[in-house]
Image 1 (cartoon, rainbow, N blue to C red):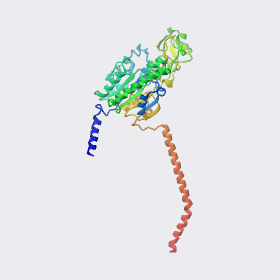
Image 2 (cartoon, helix red, strand yellow):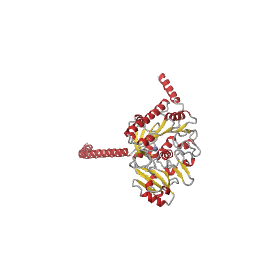
Image 3 (cartoon, helix red, strand yellow):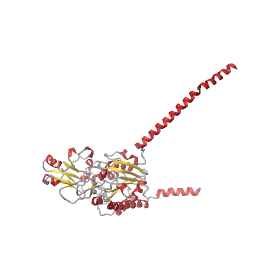
Image 4 (cartoon, protein in one colour):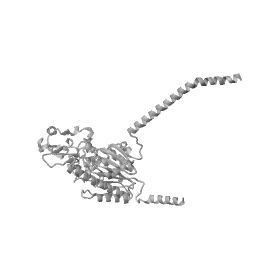
Length: 453
Ligand SMILES: [Zn+2]
């Protein structure tokens, strides 16, 4: 018995000191594999990712934000805002007031990012906390004069292993502790563009490589003793759809280039007319019926893509799988950016860690719902956002969650129980009333007894 007590005491001691970075403040690692279409999970063999999901949660489809491009969606994940609100409205932008340009390779001007406060900034403004980023759009830019305490300047040539090593080092041994970190990887987006998502042979090879990276990530966290305490979200910005040389819209065949500037091209083209807006609009309107043409003020409400100066006066939205080009040009076999209601544009979300339930699946949430969920996990007060915390409640272990089928099940069970009970009561009452004449007789006899006596 004494030995048992000593062993328990030692166990408690090692449990407390096993992870030198153990702190009561939760830690969260947010991972993005760019362009990971939701149904890759169903259509390809991904054993490491499936194991991760088995011990955690899965959201099968994430409804992302329009336009379904990389920079805008990554910024929506970390701010909970639609593009018109955070201001990163495309991968390529032009601001007509300041005459500034933005592109994937020229993204360092704070001007573009300061319309929102990303979670790594909010986290860092808390006492005794820091943030780290192994690449994520915007993490190597001063936003509201702050970068993450630890970050890497973006370079696609840095291998995954180096990014992973950096992020785990920062998460395990920094002071003040890193409580929020990001990890970004360019695949399967790059291959999706090159081969197209319907190229099963090439995509299965690429996705196996990604699955192995997920295996490496989990293994490393286990070796470092971080696996059980760290919350890990694996998600993506958008999906991918198949394009074809038979589905190309040539703008040059409809309108002369001298009439407008093209700010962004495909599959959502941003048009800045040089001449009369209505004239340009009319010419484009009748260009091709596989393309919707909108004046800025007529962009459908459901896109939440209107109220920002960086959205150009006319936008063209190609139908799924169609490409907008000026003339004959080289073509991507896969692309994204299309209508965010298309399932092919949706990514997934999987998560594991002490904040998450185990073995739970949910069909959908929105990209903007991820932010309030992350703030909750980290105990941060969220900035104003477009997300809804309750959408993600069921994923979290500390939330009371009941879904519709469960509610229906409980109501039906309660009704059944009530019916049985009512039946039983009626049955017992009718039995009681059936035996009453006999008992009355007995009573009368009893009542009579004293009189006789
Ligand atoms: Zn892409």
